[in-house]
Image (cartoon, rainbow, N blue to C red; front, side, top):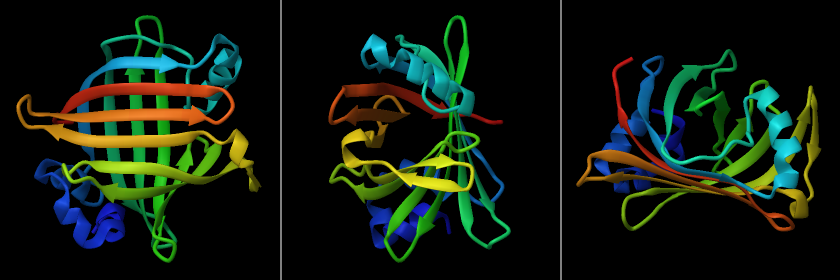
Length: 203
């Protein structure tokens, strides 16, 4: 049973059948998908130095574009602690550069949240709250966040947080998975937005 099945419980069965299949994720049997981001946008140009710096940690990036090819790979693995972890690898193929956005997810069953460590090595941490929409989509909202500096974890003031909303769906007519990610900040507004679609492929 993966972290998503454990976290959502009976609600996992309310997901679209293809999303249930996609997030079942047997241990050491990765899911691999390929498609395109129909839209990738970032905030104001003054954010560019921060987004450029974040690429060192395979985290955010400053590039924008339309119809950008990308791949996603999820691997479920068991940690030495006995916890189950999902390793996320997202790769975006811009015309002149390749960017990655990686993350490591485990769960906190007591607080009923996903613990999301963003970047590689991890630069930020965020609580994630999961729910299932009436349409069978998976909806994710960010919670409290921390900046990671080695073993030091520094709470991020709410006014400086990146407020994240993610919606994963499946389009039956076109037989594609869909993803919409919006990252906002209370002060600067849009930090990053990307929307796209993909299909499962053999590795």
